[in-house]
Length: 189
Image 1 (cartoon, rainbow, N blue to C red):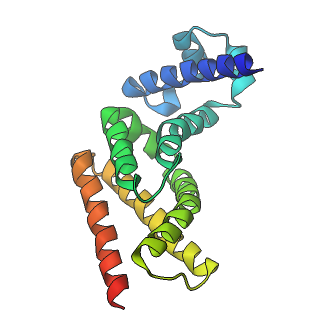
Image 2 (image 1 turned 90 degrees about the vertical axis):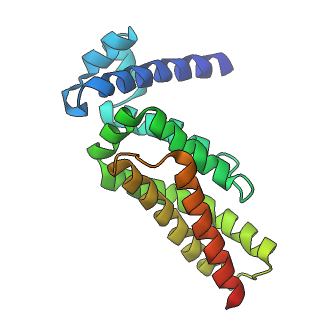
Image 3 (image 1 turned 180 degrees about the horizontal axis):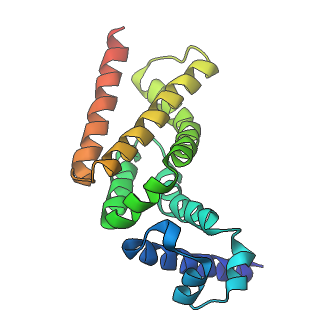
């Protein structure tokens, strides 16, 4: 069973890599399933075995490259390293990510915000415990996590839409400065 899973993952990755390469020179709406199959040297039917359409493949690719990397084992100690890695990944394949984010920014932003909020709930609790600020209640922690989840996804989207001009370290430092300012404010209240 493990071997089948690895084979399926390799096939998905092969198709995702094909889409990524094709999107560097073509707009998403011009890329067909046949283009992806031909580029990745698979049969069209193999594509449909794994994905319903190009959008599902693109969603899977973005999830694998950005969200899994960011959210796996996310905690307050590695938050900035993970954000830096996200910005670096995006900037490395700048053309692809800019094209990908133009396709369905609203849905992607909503999805990223939801997943980030889920992960930030634990980070907020950890931050509160470390700073000595007690949580009022679970719902308040969720609101704080939503604030940061939406905020960070908004910053990432805006950065991409502005052309990714600032380097990843600068963007990570800006988010770190924001978090530090929030910590200072919370301690003075």
